[in-house]
Image (tube, rainbow, N blue to C red; front, side):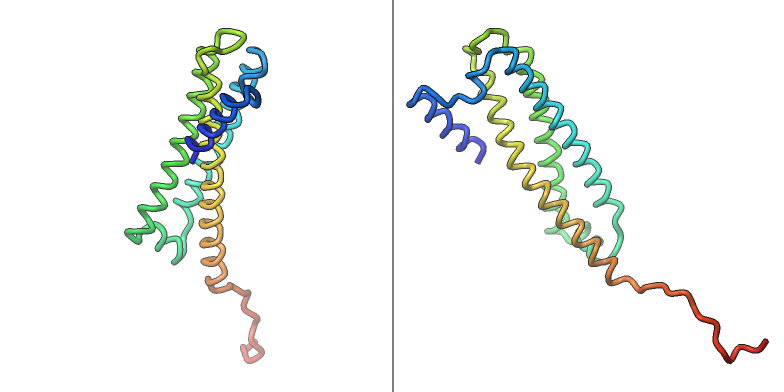
Amino acid sequence: MAAAVLGGHGLLVALSGCGDIFGAPGREQRLEIYTTGATVVALVGSFVTAAIAQYASATGRRMRVLRTAPHLASQFRRNWVSVLSATLLISATCLLAIVLDTTETDPGGVHWAVEGVLILGAARAYRLLWLFNAVIQATDRDLADSPQSTPQQPSSSTPR
């Protein structure tokens, strides 16, 4: 999906000569975009690890099924790894772009690589929200199913 969106945008820029979002600004502004992208993705990565910790520590029947059912467990693990690896790729690409984008006009097209990974990041962010939601819903349902502990009232038939 990211490649299709990036390719479509690249074709639009090639045909029309305008709309190059990251290529139009000067080098200093591009470097700020790359730095901000790496920073934001690193922050999202910390949310991913927090979500994985929540997933791993949650208890209850539904969470046990999510972690042990062969199809569900592998799907969840694959999704977590996909989101986490995407954050690493995006951050690394943004940091590498800082080193490689050395001219005012970026003739090498480094900004296109950054645009591509940021589009990938947007798609992975949607997946992260889906994962968060699934874990929260399962945890909440497990909590709702657990017996409520109420303080016991002293019975009136208890001898004094």
